[in-house]
Image (tube, rainbow, N blue to C red; front, side):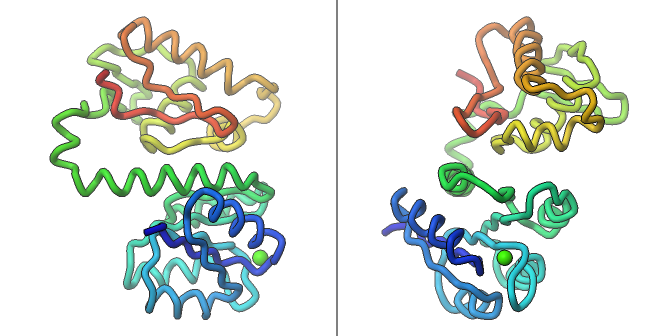
Length: 233
Ligand code: CA
């Protein structure tokens, strides 16, 4: 049975793109243009995940998510306007699982949908999984600005610390370069084209110095980086 994904988006071009990409990836996309249609369907039909545009003709995606959370913990991805940081923060605070900034590539959305659904299903086998998977080998002390990795204190620069902290706080979540730049680098003047990649590279080297056998920072080609928590192998 293909997994049903509800797309709530009033712009036909964007909705069509998502419907096509999700169907192509083996999902069963269902499209609603209005918040009230969406909520009716969410109450009466089974879905595996929902994608909410923030700006809808009869309300906003946040209210829709708040209403959904009263009766369901269905995973939600928000589609937010470019550069609107408030949207992203509010979205995550009210229980969204992820957000995608417009304009986006359909491939990125499909990848994020897959990651969230994959994250969901292993939870059902948590007992099994925990025996084979190591718990996350990082210890974060946000107050002192220190991170320990496999019981060794890491010597990190300010941005390496902020970058690794963000990844540790959201294990397995894929952050695009743009998202990392926005969330970690406060001063755009310090940012260059390869800033994120350069810091990831130095971070990896420092982690490898502690444990040469594992590389917990994963590169997702075309998407970004995530922190792998199943890095026991
Ligand atoms: Ca809209």
